[in-house]
Length: 242
Image 1 (tube, rainbow, N blue to C red):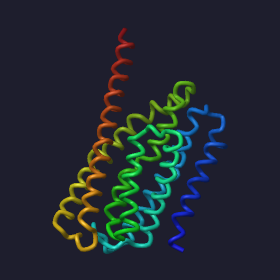
Image 2 (cartoon, rainbow, N blue to C red):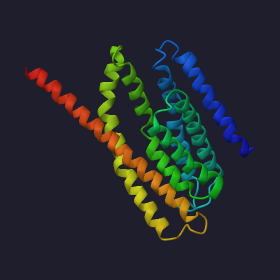
Image 3 (cartoon, one colour):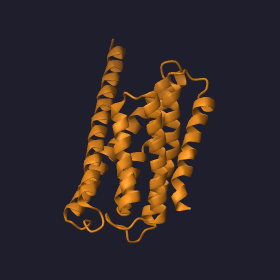
């Protein structure tokens, strides 16, 4: 039954995407509907994935960076693999020129798939990183949907303005502070050779490279958002002074 989990989850995400596109966001402009549908499946994935991952980690008393994956950890990996496959399909169809996101999804899938189906070890490390990546999901996707409609819907503009500072703070704490620290801990463990008997060196090196690149892009992205927010607030103050 476990081997059928991934196809079932992929079908679930695909169904949610289609419902979002043709039902939930049917009144949105054709240009915005694909992005909004992508946000909805991201919402479906993000917060539940955090809870699944936390439970999978806490229920494993032998957890280390190289411990054998448990059934619950494998389910959580499948849950995320199904989401990233669906969203990758979305980008290939509607945004084939978005090389950054397509590359991100392919690299993420490589990490999840190798952990789940090739080495069967190391899920603890991957799931902690999943938590750090998805703990901002609800806020980020709500912020993204609001940003898409802030130009023509006043309520969306208010939600966008209200969410921006706390979202930026949470994202910075997770991606720019906790993320790098945890990756450092991973590096120390793997470089020691403690996992070489169960996780080939080329695989954990690949994991580290992918994660470091993802964190670097995240830090660059949030830095630009902070700069943009600062400029907006300065501009508002200058208008009031005038």
